[in-house]
Image (cartoon, rainbow, N blue to C red; front, side, top):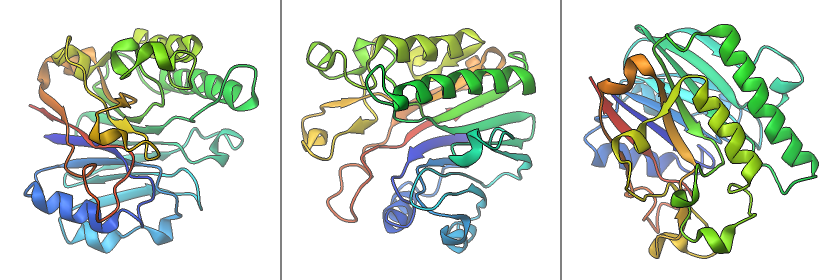
Length: 259
């Protein structure tokens, strides 16, 4: 099974890019996790994905946020959000079941510098997600969590750690709450397969950082221990990011192959 996570930064704006990208790959991706749809369910291009053999489950929101899972393998037990109205005002979480796999798609809040409301919201979101994970699942379950986590795990995941120290995505508190998620029983698949490799998944539009590889690794595929050794390959696909037209997202897809 080939699985991919991709923050598209507007599904409508990125529709043509995504279709061209899938065609360039020979449509070899079985499961797609999209974040930051920036549109409600009615604006999702279902027909385009159905024509390629995907079934799509969408949890959209006007203008902001939104997540979707598109799969060529039948999905069941689709869960949208936390099941808690205040937290579900922002559409950032959904889960599906594919066979014995529980697949969770997340779009973590961007946050802000400490002592701000957005900083506290991001920290609380992580804690709420961890509580939800503990309530719904066990670390012995076969779980894959993919998405935009809006945090670099360490200085190795930032192009200029010293220059960006204290920036959003590199803050000590953000990294600590992300590690608490891993300590629940999750493995960072990319770092497991590539313990010394440096790669990024996001590059700032404003600085044209993609052309100098000045980015951050903030998109992840995580899995529970029962699945770790089933992952055989993981990589960032730069094809959709190094486009001038159709206009790219500021993220690149992260995809993996598992038995």
